Image (cartoon, rainbow, N blue to C red; front, side, top):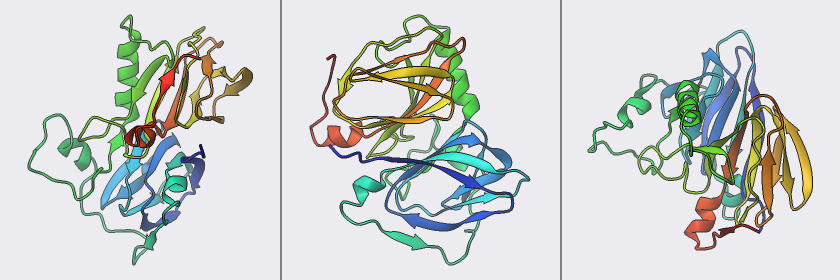
Length: 261
């Protein structure tokens, strides 16, 4: 199976604007180094980018990136461009570098929360959303305080859920975080999907079909489909892995399988 998902790193310099555009590949951003003076604007809504935040830019949504701060901002880009390019990758530029702000910051998080107006329909199958790091970190701490909240194969795994369905982040791929406590070694398993990893924090190793890959903060690695793999954290602190996995696409086709080798 060809890898259908793409991961890269993007930097926006002080005073720089990545001009407004839209495309049919869907994209996500995990903020590595953010700033309260920088934002990704999606469909007219400014989404401030703080370190650790996760932001979605679903397919065919207008977006631009602007940094009005004094230091560079850096994030991880994830796209399903390789899957979409099997058909045709469409790209359209906006008629000005920055799209106008038509919604207040935080509007999507308020309107798409647990108490939300059910009559309000989004023009997009998957609306854009910001997942603040403070909320994610609080959930991780809650899991750590509860015994039995640890998956044998993935450690403490969180999913960045679809804001309306509660399912995978996007129709084509799912995103999440895996937290491995000090000394944690997971059980080996394999699944029929591609998985990309970014080491958000910590150090450790992943063994893939018997080959050991050491990793530390900032590294990116790939686990191909149907390869047996497990993770180890030999450090003194938690290790946190950001994951992108195209299991929603293989599951929609009735192909997804998972098992212990």
